[in-house]
Length: 138
Image 1: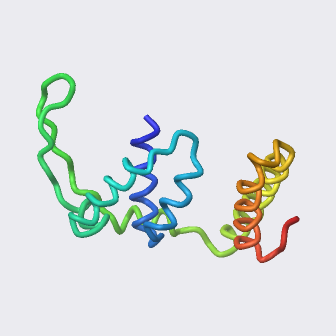
Image 2: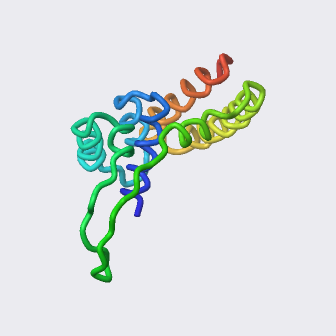
Image 3: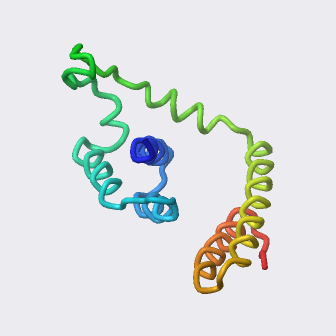
């Protein structure tokens, strides 16, 4: 479900050095976001010594749906991090340009909705687009 996906995304972002505050802030823009669930997962990572330590340890988790014993395997965290950080600067700029255009379209669409609903969301996406491109979006 979406709760599990949120945790997976959060741990990947932690591995890439994104702050917990930024992860929570962005997550709260998701439909159906439940901050206590994400905070619980983040607390679990902190308790384990961080996302890298959490993923690097093998643990016995008990039985799966069929009653079979399940054991997790340690994750090669450096390999995961490298695969996410492997983009060249040129690829990253191209991706940011595409994402910025999409963010601006979303901001304009949000601005067309009821002003009471959309102002905060539209402003958020304008700031994100400006931050990612250095260009001011109106």
